[in-house]
Amino acid sequence: MLGMAFGIVLLGVFGIRVMRAAYGGGRRVRAAQRRIGGRRRVFVEQLEATLKWARATRPIYKAWSGTRPFRVAGIVDEAEGCKSFYLVPVDGRPLPRFEPGQYLTFQLPIDLRQKPLVRCYSLSEHPREDYYRVTIKQVEAPVGKPDIPAGRGSGYFCEQVKLGATLDVQAPQGAFFLDPTNELPVVLVGSGIGITPILSMANSIVHERSPREVFVFAGFGNSREQPFREHLRELASHDKVQVDVSYSRPMPADRLGRDYEHRGRVDVARLREVLPSNNYCFYVCGPPGMMESLVPALREWGVPESHIRFEAFGPASVKGLSRGAGSDKIESEPCAVGFSSTETTCRWSGEYESLLEFAESQGVVLDYGCRAGNCGQCLVSVRHGKVVHVKKPGVPMGENECLTCIGLPQGDVELEA
Image 1 (tube, rainbow, N blue to C red):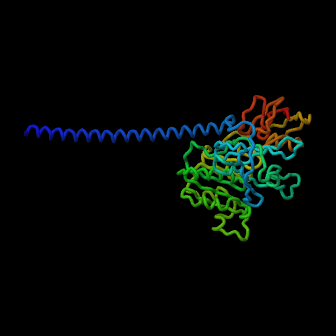
Image 2 (image 1 turned 180 degrees about the vertical axis):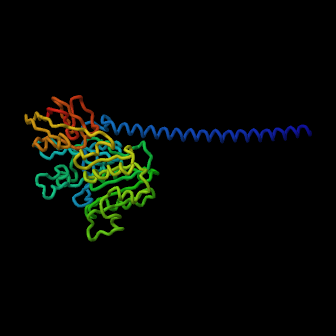
Image 3 (image 1 turned 45 degrees about the vertical axis):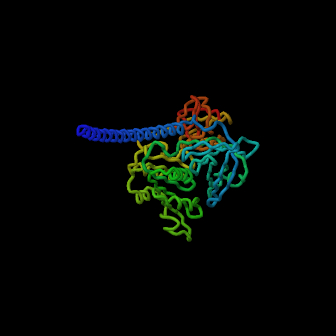
């Protein structure tokens, strides 16, 4: 009996040890499985981000070819001369995702006797399946410069587009968007209507509950010219988001600390005053004047070129922006530029920033859309000679084709335009 009892005790002790070993081994297996699962999730997320980056940066990857009809389902007055247009697809199908910061290209029937006017406007909301939103400021003719016309596209939207109207829209595109492969904290800088792609980026980060730290710098003339006032305040209520609004021309009723945080323009001095360091990815969008000063100032501050992304609202060839620090300037010597549509040849002396600007100065009418080398509307054939681009074109091109909005002649050229 004693031996049997002793055997039972040994069996019980051995069983406990076996159970403990098995339980400990199970914990180790489960821990290893969690580590593997975590690594797999990180890998899948990185792969998805890389694929998104590849699709967004390659112009051949578009959600649909040609145009798609959209109905204007809502129009909201955001500020003086500034409206948001809510667009839903006529076919009712879910909308494909776009990258925050991209734009839509519209074909506008301004004059039924002529082909549609092509214009590009940034999406101002985070990606959704039910609607797209673009926010457009009406461009008036500059005071004292009667030779510069008002914006035809923005005027058409703000004055003629009504609820229920149908518009032909190309798929979202553009190379200015949040980099899904980069997890660094971000600084989003928008001035004037340049706030639209910046707002899309900020909304997307908040909507996706990203842990990234975000600083939003927004510049306007005053409260009357500022769109999305309440929405920017709401963004600032999120833990990871800080919003800094600058007014360059505040009205008497505008109050510092209530309506805006800084009097003046958004410049690198303001950024350095607010930011704890320059260790951020900077996304900048605004009019040429701000871009020409702020982007080079960021480089001088020591921000790496790979951490600066920008989009200019206005003429695409903002001086010095298309070339990074230390890059060689593209020279264009005096030469002859011929346009087949007018059977004229004009003398290029190098004072213009692009062939498009040069053609306009000579009274030659050329098609254009974004003026940034992205939409392809200004694509023409080069009959003779060579044209170089000041930045990488955002659309696929043939060997003997060029984009006049970012093209410069290299010797005598003749364009099929």
